Image 1 (spheres, helix red, strand yellow):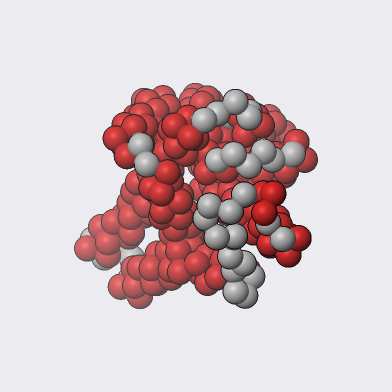
Image 2 (cartoon, rainbow, N blue to C red):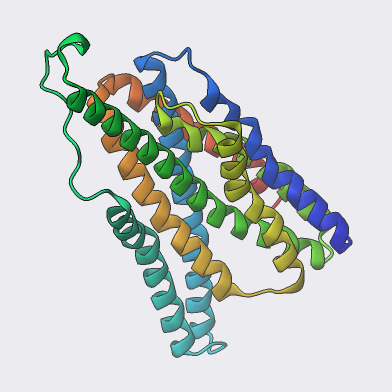
Length: 286
């Protein structure tokens, strides 16, 4: 498979993420529906979390096997373990630190419960508007964080496409592209699910899709020319940590809205969809 064909198909696999993003524009969703969508996205993210860490740990396990057979040094194995740990910390604690520093100093408080719009002073009304705007910006920022975490994961998927295409495994590369395309189509829900009643602009959706799906395209180019297990491991580790952080943020926000049983059922549904879409990749040997 030529470089041009690999890049084109890698782009197709990545940008199927746009199939799920327009759901974020719907304004007909009640509280139950918003909780269901957000928790479905948590299920998808939970599967991706398991998937990326299993790939990362398999790289370390392969290095350990090579060390046991004296084909690799202990220093290389230790380097991979440090890379896995540091990458995971950067994705989880690093994102939490960045998020904390991006928050405004001293959150504005809404008016006292029970006060009607007619009895609000102009200052209280302005404070409420600012609070709502801050909540909206925070929701959009969290969703972009999800897109970034998914993008790191998709870069590693793109590497797999590029490596298999360069090695001449055309059937494997084709199956990987189909599998990742189906899988990425569900990731759009993972990005917009936590937005709740916040309606993003089409421009925002375009940027989110580019952040989440574009790295598959970039990864296919890098993978076609470069094969590096430490590079793959670093992306898997950062993606795993970032996804874990995002799952915690979404879960914490949704539990306040109730509908606990529905939410858990939707987590299961999202996880199951992740498994089903990944079966094509597994069947092809990915």
